Image (cartoon, rainbow, N blue to C red; front, side, top):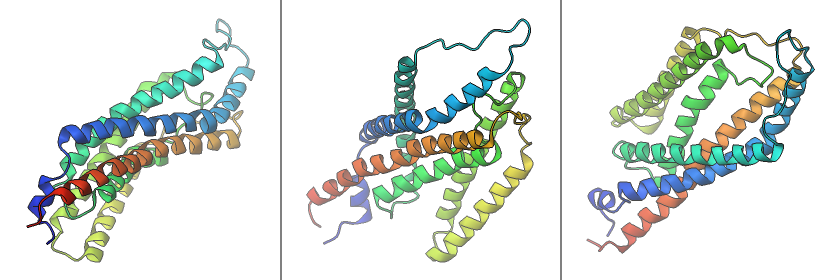
Length: 255
């Protein structure tokens, strides 16, 4: 006889188990993102640095030189991505544990991938639309703090939209799935449009000597790196959690 909902909830991994899986999944996705950073993001960065180095040095300025060798930069970049992935994985596992009460009817793998896609959309895709990443040759150093505040503010607002969407979906649970999905989607679209209009434009213009191809290669490559981190995290975490939940249910005594 199939297990009841209470039995299913009782046999899911503990928070400690979820945390360990989140850290492991974060390390894997961070490593993958780091490799994407080296292989995909690296070329447009080098092209942008070539543009920056070709500019005349201002009086009293310093020439552009590498502080670290290329090999050190590659290893350091991949290691940093892994560490970020571990931290993000721990936070993701915590968010996943909190979301189980809202989407208990979904399989663990589906819930993990859905959560990672939602966070990617709120914390990466939304900011990339309003404030796309710029290579080293673009950006005024004097506006770094202002741009950081805008970027982090939009991420926070996007995460609130994602949280509100999940809460709205749980509150509309009495509706059939197409109606509920349409209502949530419309609410998200309206909220995103409001955020894109309300937040001010980026204060920095793109210099004329930066080729458009280099600019957009960097932006798309950076987005691909972030997508690898978040979506890879959801897939790997789901693969680690879903079989564990199924095995726990399988060994439970039939009612």
